[in-house]
Length: 407
Image 1 (tube, rainbow, N blue to C red):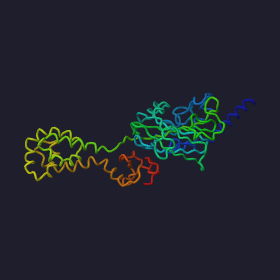
Image 2 (image 1 turned 30 degrees about the horizontal axis):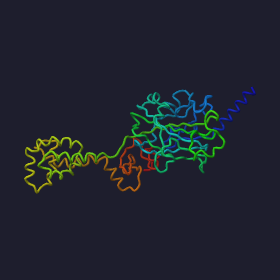
Image 3 (image 1 turned 90 degrees about the vertical axis):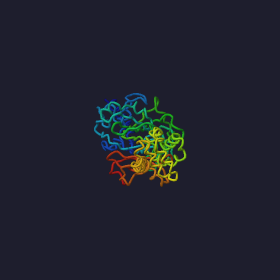
């Protein structure tokens, strides 16, 4: 009996030693932060080192994917269908974007942070339960972005180092790069961001960079000859929209060469229609190639006779691309205004908005009640819409719940 009490006391002291090191993913908000799980969103250590290890040597062990104990009944509290699961999207990003991630620690025990994403095909609870695995998370291991403010561009971990910040709770901002080609609209497919915190107060995380490994004292590297470390896991639901630079400039060069070779007698007047062709929709160059056959019949001859009036030429020339020659007169006014808004409807707001900006980044579309936002970069400008029910929160550069947004 005495031996049993001593063993129980040792286990209690062991777990109490680790219970101080707590943390959570705050931006985007993890599922446990949204639900304020058991009034302790910082407590998702999968039951603690003793439970996770199961007598094994680190890194071997078992844990719930979102920080619940592995042995808990399924669905676990923070997995699809669980007590604290809602599926609410707390971060919306663009494909390949640099994202800002914020971690809050309530006690400082060194260590490092890591981030991974699992894409779920489908939007149901059953889809998540069947596809969410650690192997799925491992398919998209995020690395630090090569931007100002990043700690170590290209490194998969954010290293906390030996020195604690001056104020508690401790907040860490990380800048990570989303991989190209990874998209999920939050409806037909969903992305789950996994946050991982490996503490460094009982053993030193392996392969720590020299500038962050000092000050750990005499503790050994995590593994066979060291105590099992405490670890934390969180999950956040995010959406990643497909986006790219404006496509309006790409059709511009194609209409210019196509009409010039077709009617050999009319190469000189052709350049004047080119401004109209630039704003015409992409199908116009395709249909312009058949126009040489009707073109010699009647339309070029009357248009060449009044040589002093090349200005009316542009209006018939786009018309000849799709309809036959009889209808150049009546449709000529309609194509010139209609193509202009159609290509510029998506890029024009972004390009005009970003033209006056002296800094790059993400900006709320306040004229639209922050239901959409702009991305202004040196390489181009883009326009995005937030999912229904969310508004763009400019300070944290993500679509957020309306009560968190001051538009």
